[in-house]
Length: 476
Image 1: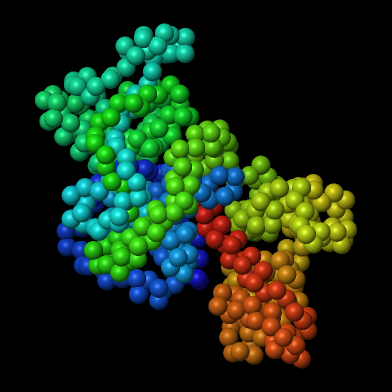
Image 2: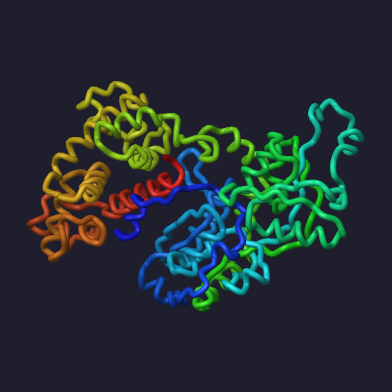
C-alpha cells in the first residue's frame, strides 16, 4: 500500500487520449527484454497496475467522483482478484504499449482495436464490445433553419466523396491505417492530416464541432455519444466494418489473460456489464449533463463548488488542497445538508458538541463547517508531533478525526506491544486499530479508550487517499 501511495506524489503529466496511437516504429523498443510478471507475481504484490486513458467515457472526474467505463470495470476486476487497483494514465497508446511491455503496468484497459500488427506485440483479451469507425462531419451553419434536403445535400454520404478531400486524425492511430486502406479500396487519394498524438478523440471531435477541422474519424460508440452533446455533428457515414475492442496483456502473462477472459465472459453473461456500457455509451442525457458541468474534469480544474473554501483551509494546514477535498467528499460528498444517523451534520460532519465548542451556530453552513473542522484537524495534527513522517502524520490525523484521538493512541499502544512500528499507519497501526474491535484486545489494561469499530478509520483513511490519487490524476 505504501508503495502505491508514492504514486500520489509522482503523477505523470496528464494529456487525455482515446483511440490514438498504434504501437509502431516511434514507440517500439527493438531489443526489449521479456518481462515475466504474471498473475501469481501480481497477487504476491497485492496490486493490479493498469494503464488507461483520460477520456469522457473511459476515466474522468465528475463532481468529485472518479468515473468511466474502463474505471467501473477495473474496480470490479480488481475486486474479483482481491487486489488493490493502481491506475496510470497515458498520453497515447504507444506509451501504453511501452509501459506494458516494460513491466511498469500489468494491463492496458482501453478500447484498443484488435489488429494483426498489435497482436505481434501483445495478447488481447476477449473483446469487450464491437464497434465500427465513422466519419465525423459538421452540418452547415444555420442548419436548424434549413430544410432537411438542403442539409443532406451539403453532407458526405459515401466515403467515395472523400476522394481529394482531407480528413484529420491522430498521429499513429488505427484511423490512419483505415484511411490509407480506404484510399486503396476506392481507388482515389484521401489526404490525411495528422494531428498531435496527445489529442484525444473527444477533443478532435470537438474541433470538428467548432469548425477547426473539416472531418475526422472515430469509433462509432464514442462518436455517437459526443454527437448527442454536439447536435451540429453528423456521424452516420461508416468507414469500416465491425471491429473488436479489447484490453491487452503481455505475451508473458497467460495466467492473467485466462483469468481476465474468464471474468469478461462471466460479466457479459449477466446484466451488470450492459448497465455499465449503456451508462457511458448510450445514456445521452447523462453525457450532456456532464458536458455542461463545470465539475467535469474535461471542462475545468474544479472538483466542487467549495473548492475556494477548501483551498483556503488546506493552505492554513499546509496540505495539498486536493487531499483535503478528498476528505470533505468522504465526509459528506460535498453535501452541506447531509446529516448522519449519529447526528453529525454538514460538509465536515460536525457533532453538535464539537460545533458548540468551536462557535458554529449553523453546521450546514459550508464556511463555518470547514473553518471549525480545520481547527479540529490542527489540534489533532499537533498531538501527533512525535510522528516524524509528514504523510504518516496526516494519516494519523485523519484517523483521529474519524474515530477519536484516544482510539488512535490505543492502536499505537497495541502496535508497540506487537513489536510493529507505531509511527507507520499502513500495515502497522491500521492493523492494530482493526484488532481493537475484539474484546481480547480492547479489554487489555494498557488500552484506555475501549472498543472502537476499527474498520471505520481503517477504511476512511484508505478511501480518502484512494480518492486523492484520482484527484491528482485530473486536477492541478
